[in-house]
Amino acid sequence: MDILTEAVGSMRTGQPVSVRTEGRAPWGLRLPPVAGAGFHVVLYGTCWLLPLEDSPPHLQPVPLSPGDVVFLRDGGGHILADHPSTPAEDEQPGQIRPGSPIGTVTVGGDGPRTSLLCGNYHLDQGRPHPLVRQLPEVIHLPTRHGRHPELSAAVQLLGAEVENPRLGSSGIVPALIDSLLLYILRAWLDDQPAAAAEGWAAALGDTAVAPALAAIHGDPSAQWTVESLADRAGLSRAAFARRFTALVGEPPMAYLTRWRMTTAARLLRESDDPLATVAARTGYGSEFAFAKAFKREYGLAPGGYRRGARTAGEGLAVAT
Image (tube, rainbow, N blue to C red; front, top):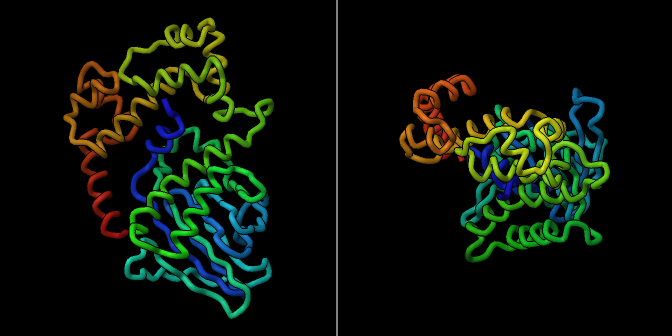
């Protein structure tokens, strides 16, 4: 069971939105917060990622070079500029060129050029998966000097399609941007030293916790207990519960309920399955018990949640 894909998929509420930013020094852009997670890929040139004036002090300026990738977990507002001292202007709406899958923003003077792909992933930040919640607010991944070869290859492919759109680019670019999120998260997880890893970075490789997580994700409808999960982990009930809670951040049964409700919400958004079917696929013996548990978690009955999700999805499709 690919837990990383499952975790990210559980939060996705739409397709990524992207804009190609072309800057010539001096240039600076003030980017507002976005709903979801933000990203930047430096295709050509150099620039700086700068925190806003009222940002927390732990957020520091980050110099960016060709091939660098930045992931902003919460989509917070920030500044991109050719130099920290350059004044920033507010971002302007991107212009869509015929045949291009992305918008384009051009800013600045007539100095050295920088080209970036900037955008955001529509992720449900109201109920983030704990794997995503435990990520740093800003992830900076340099891909030069042979680091993260798969991510580097994706960036190079993306850069080639953006710089020289050809037949098929309208389908290739969105697919590459979509895949980029998993490459970013995989690269960050790979960077965590095994001896110092904690939380989900450690849980995914733990010989006791990882099999239990795979079991929950693989079959959320099964009547799992702490004892049955501990048996899979090869630990006593108490030892397993302590280890699971320490790494995942919540007890096994609490995470099981979370994943069942997350799975149910995704089924309600993306399928037309009857509520009784959704209940059965998430481990509930009756539609009434499922509806009660779902409302306790989401504050809405399953039917109301489904209608709201469909309405929001239609609005997003029109907006994008």
